Length: 426
Ligand SMILES: *Cc1c(COP(=O)(O)O)cnc(C)c1O
Image 1 (cartoon, rainbow, N blue to C red):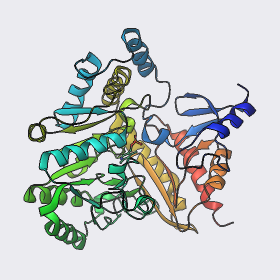
Image 2 (cartoon, rainbow, N blue to C red):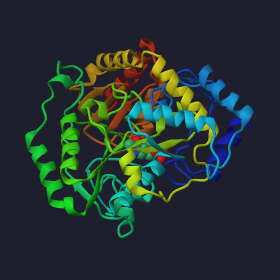
Image 3 (cartoon, rainbow, N blue to C red):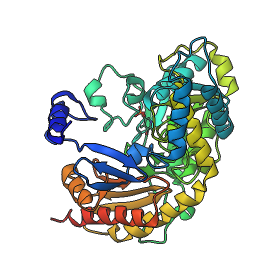
């Protein structure tokens, strides 16, 4: 299909995320993705600073992951999971159980569905149907997940009266992580005692009606790319235990090394009762997520009333297992540390620049928060001129590169971000 045709048909038929069906701007056709690079139809190569929304942690077209899909395809692409099982699912579940300490695994076909299942688990387990979360969160776009997204920025106004009303504590103070251009880092961050008291008061006030507390551990992702002190998560775990509530950790963005620990919960040394994983689970190859829980939760639930058609898809399970095996074999902790250092160095000059409110880095996540909302197309144009792919939103110009991004790639990404900052003034 020629490029012009492709663009026209895309505009004619396709919805893109959070967009009108006939958007004013057209999407860029990609013809190839290899390593950390995307190739566009006009031949341009872009360093991918987004990992396809946190997913492609090993980069694109990794030989081990390609082989895992191909080998599995030789046996079977899919079979139903009702009454049947298969080795890819069993292997992956065993590996996830070992990695998380949560032995019961429910496979879902997307992160949002995993969150729905986690919520369903909590409701079925406790017989209660209210949740406590914090403002500024993001948990997905389906209705149950949306109901615990930030009440102001999380689309609640579009669906008032349809979404269940849950309990929202204030947004955690976002003072964790590295502040480039200063010597401040996570080790020096001190939890805000006032905020800890607020969490205690909120849980105590509502404990009687609550099934669970649900949060993204340490990093609030799509709700604002903010990093909060692990002490808040630790206190939520204690409060959940004191009041007989479940703790649901949504690790869909934070899981699998992105924050510098294998899971966000590891920063706080806590184990949740229920955990969601997704995004990077298959290394960015296929859509798969999971909700995991303890034996106790599973026993209390009994029959869990959920069953996606494509549950535990063998192709996705096979590539997920290969991706986790690759992750655990490679020095991911050092790689993420190097990325953290590279982003810290590269973004230092943005700190204090006109139009910039905050610059922060944690693990393989680098964020420039601007004073005013960014013009997405303009910023995207600038970073693309610098040979980089980013997708800013709101007041955020941010990156979470593949773990295999080298020093040159990181320099290109941060230079592109700095160029976007320089253009804020004009
Ligand atoms: C992306 C995300 C989801 C939703 O996952 P999808 O696969 O897009 O449905 C849920 N929770 C968090 C924390 C996420 O970052």
